[in-house]
Length: 486
Picture 1 (cartoon, rainbow, N blue to C red):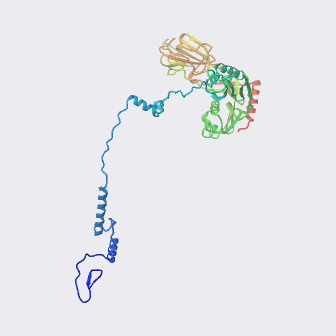
Picture 2 (cartoon, rainbow, N blue to C red):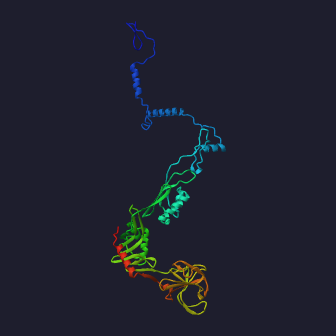
Picture 3 (cartoon, rainbow, N blue to C red):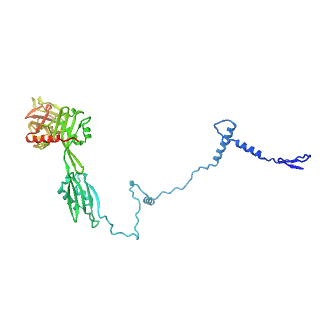
């Protein structure tokens, strides 16, 4: 008999027979061996190691195959052709502009106003607020009534309000920048301005004004404000800069500049050192509500070691100037150059080019082009202006005291007799009138009617306070010195 085993047929008993060839099949052990062999197969090869080995070549082949497979699936790249929009016509462009949002640079004229349909009912009148609050500001050179008109007050009412304000304070005293608080009331129709119901503002540091409507009339109510007028005293060291030190201490810039000008009349500014002590007293007004104003310089003091200079501002002869503690006011200076030119002849004996002989030349000649401006060398009053013999067109100015100056050979005279002129003021033009050989200015200086050399004159003008005025002066100075520095 025949028995079937796993591999084929075998004979049974003592007889041996050959089984027919059969297709070979894998048993479980064989399958397991193949799986273990596949598991041992390394699919991902590090191409950076074992270069040139069998495994490396197998990894390179695998990588090449994968790249080729990825490239085969890549889509083709070709341009897409689409239709081009036709250019907009003028009407289409305008329509697009209306529906778009245009920037301000193009006028922002976008949007479309639709025509009202039958469903829209037009109002006969729009309601208004019963009152509106307005704030206006008085500008430099502005008129009070004009400010009210710009805020919405009627012209006639604005003028009447300005007249009421002028009865309490001068309109010119109201400082630019003043804020006006207005309340405008209800009006009967939109064709007339709103009536003024309330106006409030601060007219001065010591005065506020309130104007209110009572019935059909406006009533102005002044509101006085208490003000303390105690002057402000500031002291400190000059340091590296007088201006910087005084400003840091709280002194106004205008007061510091006035201090420097006052001191410059008595001491050299270059002689003021960093360790010197300055003393400044200025006008100061402080209102009860905290507002304050700082005014002019009243006192200028300087202490240099044991030397102390005190200067008090005082009005003498209608003019404000600084006097020292003894009541002496002193102004030092030098004459201004009367013309822009070069000196051609000096003071003294010389040979006269026209007369042909030597004689005393009582001034200095300055050569300058015809028509050059001539200015006054000093302050004074014009004593003579006209033709003066060999001087030609001549101007004589009497300065304070016994000093005077003269200007000759002018082509044209500007100054008038009796006129008060200041140093640097135009009085005429260079010419060649009188005994002259060419355009120039003959300038002379005389003291007590005696000609002196202009190049050597340095003058001092001094004023002295005496009598009862000196007593008031010293009392004022003592009061200021009793103030404490802040």
